[in-house]
Length: 78
Image (tube, rainbow, N blue to C red; front, side, top):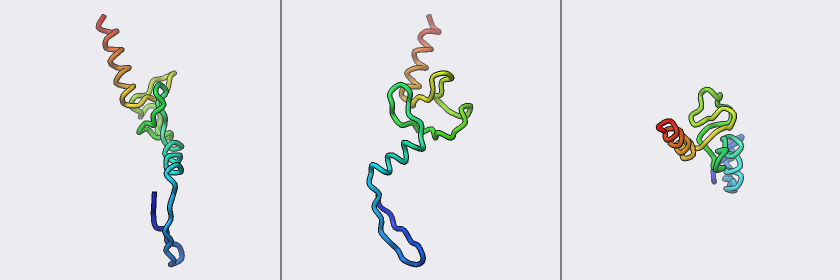
């Protein structure tokens, strides 16, 4: 990741290694408790405002959330 930083009138080009950018995202967003993928849910999002959150288990990504909902619909249909 690249950017331009300006301080006190002097502009400096900076380069942030990709691993630092990914680490920053990992620090800010939840991981899926089933597959481990980063989700689009920020860690500071209240539980009651989250999509794909299962009480007692944790945050799911969209793919795992849909899979769990499908399984629950199948079980309810029996």
